[in-house]
Image (tube, rainbow, N blue to C red; front, side):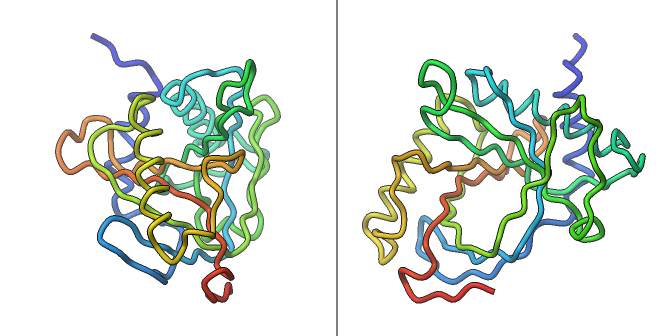
Length: 209
């Protein structure tokens, strides 16, 4: 049976990206079930996926557009190396009929951080510039599906509520959480995923860059 094109692209690219660039960070707090990282200023290419009611479908379709951008669908015709993770940000209740809204993002390599190639207009992509900030991270294995990403976010929220970071986030709220995926769809064992919450560094005295 032939694989859907976006799934095949992820399968081909992610194994090759094991040594790929990832956004740089410093771990500023660690517990048994989560850690807090301080990320540097970064630029990501973002694919909004309006009117898509599914986390899984939004990730698949958003990545397909980002893949075209990597392969040269930009005004410079630049080929851009794959990075990790594939990051899907979820904004609960911001979509049509109070569904979630999704944004699929790829970190841009250092070579393109200062001046990202402009995507072709029909791709509906835009660069997101993230200032240095803290992110609470919970790792989980297996596949990231619609039926488990919310559960993983709730587990991270519970862990944070029992930690010194309890007042640093307001989940659940309109603030986005994100699911970071590092593994090929055909990696069945040892899959690596993370759920990310933005948290307030200053609430615990951590200084940003």
